[in-house]
Length: 224
Ligand SMILES: [Fe+2]
Image (cartoon, rainbow, N blue to C red):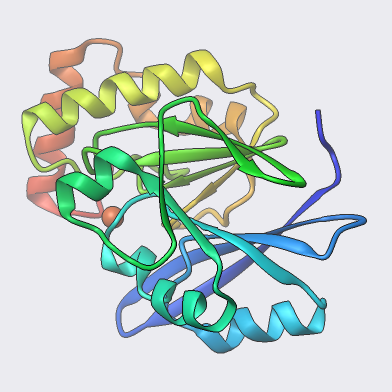
């Protein structure tokens, strides 16, 4: 396992939106990756320049505007590559300069970084999580407190499969970095989330679907 990756967590805010953007760097190189760049470009640029980092690629967990709104500015400034799942880009017509489609289970060709892409539909049809050494970036698929909003029964059924997949695939000591947090700061081990997150404890597909859709009817950001 690669152990030399460093993750810098940036809390980015605009109006009522709070997103978490992550910059991943690696000892011995000047390159870095960024996940879901949002809202506050000054924070991102100053971290890059203070640490003398070159932006190698942008990884997008999905196409929602609150996760992608700084892509254009960063691509213009650094001419960097951008990755998103092919399904997501096609389904929601997401476009930008230097865009590449990532496929499920693909190891992305990012020189110093080994990035494994996992397709985890549910919140959107082409949501992706990215595993970089023992860090998993989950976007709006998985939060410490719950999982992302699902619009339909089909989406909730997909989310059920995606969470089961993560449970079967991700080791307990993997550190989880979600796109938002609702009380617990990013950076908890997957084992704690599996223990505390109610969506890992509903082992019947239909009950999971009903629960996710009913909870969202009361309050979008209530998870229980
Ligand atoms: Fe989203």
